[in-house]
Image 1 (cartoon, rainbow, N blue to C red):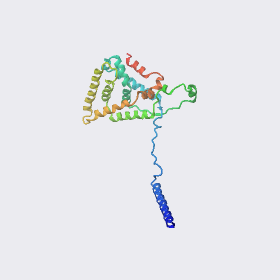
Image 2 (cartoon, rainbow, N blue to C red):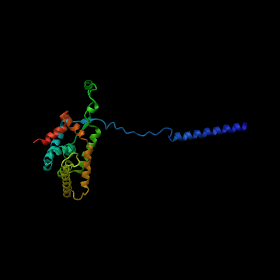
Image 3 (tube, helix red, strand yellow):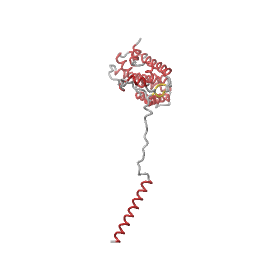
Image 4 (cartoon, rainbow, N blue to C red):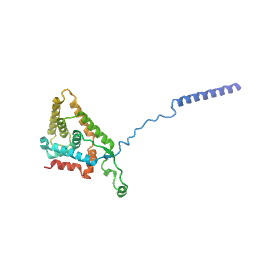
Length: 254
């Protein structure tokens, strides 16, 4: 019996030694606590922003917008379209055309954080203004997307003719819903693309991939919502007015 007790005590001692050794190895490898995965905070990009110099920048943006509508009106093929088709194309393409105008004129702008609503405004509203009724405020992420798009066009260094024909491919989009003359518009888009390709031959004879790069860069225009353009560049000027209504007045005015 005495021998049995001694053997049992030795076995327990060995088990404690083994368990301590295992615990030491686990702790030394850092496996006792799970590794922390670094988390990326997107709070900065969700910040709402506004123009740093709204007076100067909004004036420049207004000039670009006027030239954009004038360009559409100056196209004989566009004037031949039914008024409803003209309206549909305007609604679909004014924002991408405006961004192309910013790129062509190399418009620079700075933003900063939007000021928080004043205490008086909060008291007066008293919760009557719901988030859904507020206009979508420009975010830092949206502005960064816009700037990245502009930089891509600047890197291409397009000529005035390239910009003109590219604008034609953007205006005459046969995929806009509800068009009456969609086949005619599809033909106009093909002509604009063909003219763009033809003008590249004398300007860039050795750059065979330029046409594809231009169209690829232009595809990024649709990633920028018109609401961002409206709220950032025109809301300080037009107040609560509907920008599209103003564009329609500009398009159909004589």
